[in-house]
Amino acid sequence: MTAGCLPVPGAGQGHAPRPRTTAALGAALVVAALAVGPWTAPAAAEGRAGHDAARHARRPAATGGARRPATTAKQAWPPAWKRAHAARAVQAVPVLPGYVQRQLRGSRPLESRWVPAGFLAAALLAALLWRWRGRRHPAATRRRRVWRATAATGSTAALLVLAVLAGVNSDVGYVPTLGALFGRRVTGGGAAPARRPQALGDPTRNAGSEPLVPGGSRVDRDMVAAPAYGVPPRPVYVYLPPGYELPREARLRYPVVYLIHGYPGSALDWFRSGAVRETMDTLIADRLVHPMIVVAPNAAASWASDSECLDAVGRGRKLESYLTRTVVDFVDHRYRTIRSRWARAIGGMSSGAYCGLNLGLRHQDEFSVILAHEPYGTPGDVARRRLLGGSWARYRANSPSIYLRTLTFRYPMAVFLDAGSSDRGVIRTARSLALELAGRGQLVAFRLARGVGHNWREARLELPYSLVFAVRYLLPPR
Image (cartoon, rainbow, N blue to C red):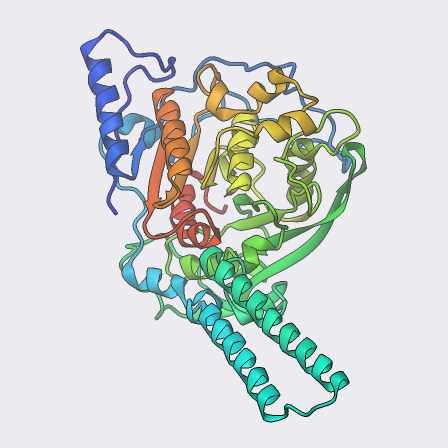
């Protein structure tokens, strides 16, 4: 699918229409681009400094240690941001070569429609078999007949339940492979050999013939707690790119992408359902992205309730503070990261996409890129009542669909949004958010994923595009 980059008049100003002809023409072009499908808009000036500084005042990290130096608004923009700001011309959005798309789709046997059909057929066959046995042995004792009826009902019901679960999974894609079903270990190394560092080249050229060097990607599982925020130790999965452990790269530092799971879910989901490791290994091997660290934290309040990545009022867990301070500080101190907003992206899928969008916009000094797969624009009324103490002021302060109109952009932001073609509600939300962001002069890309809905299949298929988008604006390893 093709897309373009449209200039937005009045960069850094409000979203209200202007009486000038140029402004009206610019707005019409943006609306037309959204109606067609994916598009991008160039970044503009930083905007005025300050956005409710008291609300977003920094506190000491729960993990202890000195805070990293804050990025200042006067810091020079990286070259990619300068080019995007100055281009004022149509630019191509991420496009993946056909062979890469086929490789990343791979074999997902548990997503096949034949799996639930097989369980349904087995349930029907079991029912017929038990019925046939009953007719063949009509003179069985009462006790045997009761046992036979119980076994027939239980086995048939179990197969029907499996058929329903398999049908849901074939649509959602939560457990795509047998390895994911039986808990195949995702941590450790050796998944893919490292290639010698190369500049990003022509994406249509296969780099498979390049010489290999020892070392491969690795996934670590760390336990990160924040007692000050009411968060007990919880897992954080960290993808380290091929070559990270090579002695000659011991001083190389990497950009970081933070990905938040949906609800219900856990930190493991982006590796089990989202195929982060396979996607990153493929994109790095084919030189479509620079090596990056990818972090998947646990953002759930519990299995039965969603946190929306909010700081709960009262004694509840402060997940916003945990994710933007504790987790970021932990990753920066444990791994070789580039400690700058220009080298951090945050995103997620579904409720995780809302988290990434809200946290990225509220913490512009921490993140420069947002990757929102199937986002929505508010935390919902249940979260307002359960997590925000019923406060409408806190609700509006955590609803991008509301506060984008008046938000002050202290730094430029690059935002990737997408939605499945059958997910009409999220399509409307994502396009509305894209319009607001473009109207405020930010760099925006929107993609419509054909043939999928609101599920992990959409997030997994679109992840390569968002990562290629992110690498354009994140600082490369250095």
